[in-house]
Every structure is written in structure tokens, then in C-alpha cells.
Image 1 (cartoon, rainbow, N blue to C red):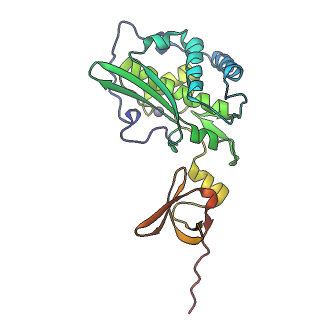
Image 2 (image 1 turned 90 degrees about the vertical axis):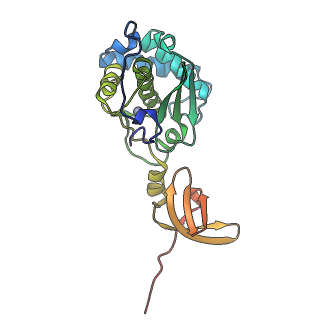
Length: 263
Ligand SMILES: [Zn+2]
């Protein structure tokens, strides 16, 4: 799954990299770490998150809050950038989780209004919680196998940090391009720029045997309705007739029995 698909997402446009401040590029952009160094630093971050977070109290955590992203940012800044990342920002940074992002693992946005610059990193809590749940398969993020939900969270966050670094330095960023991929590899050992977190469409197929295009039934109060699945995000969009469609939780759907024709 690609990270960023939306046309409006800055990560998806070809990046016009123009160095913003050639005199003082952030230190982190010149870093190249050995695999062992990356492992040691990410191992430290993992331990400290588990020790300090109020919500992430286990590797397969069941709760997370925006403040945990602030905790992660502080730890990555300290251990990978010697505290230089926060200082290199040219404006405020917002860190938040989104339940509505059901395809992208995360996104990083650079906003410019006149001379004012701000950044936002958003991570999909929906995709994190759908992974390591009921679909059993190996989950890779950025080409690296994730053993648990905390691993996945950290790999997604690292990807977004690379976008942030590119935005700081170049004012543009694209994970489809070689400079991003080199930086992600040198800093965090990422070998690709895709995530394989479990999507709602995959859960629908594996756990409920339902896919887009299928005919399904569900109960609405005491009426049994039949329709066709048009889309699967957090819920399935089911078209019942030309002017009636419903957003139905997957667990309430059943496959409609096939119509049998006879002559
Ligand atoms: Zn990306």
C-alpha cells in the first residue's frame, strides 16, 4: 500500500527541491547510521515509550493518544538528531492521530500562509489497530518486518519524520523519489517506502468474506435489506437502491444468498 495517494497531499506531488537554507542544513540530514546503531536507538525509544506512556503500556497496545506522538517525537529528536530537529523547524508542528485515514498509514503536511510556515504529522490509528488483530500475516512497513503494533507505529512515524526533514530542508517532499528513499535508508534502514498494514478491505475479505461488488444483506430495525457493496472504509457503503445507500459496520453484514433462476 502506498503511503500517500491523495492529489491534495503534498507528499504525492513531484517534489521541487530547492534548498531553503544552504548555510545551515539540519545535522540530521547528513547522518548515516549503521544497522546496529539504528537498532540500538530504536530499541531505546521502544523501552522509553513503554516506560513513560500512559496508554502504550504493552507492545500490542490497545490505546494511544496524540500525546504519545509528542513523546515519540521528543525521543527520536533526542536519540537520532541530538535535539536538533525541533530547533530546525521553521514553524509550529502539530502531531495527531486520525481514525478517518483508512488507506494511508500517515501523512505529513507543510502549510505556508504568507511567510508563516507550519507542519502537521497525522498517523492512522485505524490501520494500527486493525493490524495485529484478526488477520494473521507478516506485516512489513518500509520493507521491515514489524513484530507488534509498537514496531508498526514507530516505522510509520519514522517515514513521516523523513517527510518532515525534507520539508524543513527543501520545502518539498516525495517518498516516491530517490532523495527521500536514500535518506530513509541512511537514517532508519528503510528498504522501501510502502506499508502493508491491514486495511478494512482486507479484514472484510479475510474475516467476513465480503468484497466490493458483493451482494449483502443486513437488518435495519426490523427490515431486512439487500444491496451491493460499493466501498469499504471504516464501514461498508451498501447501495440498496438508486436513491438509498447505507454505511454499515462489517460485522452486521451477511453475504446475500445467490438468486437461483429456473425455467
Ligand atoms: Zn510518504
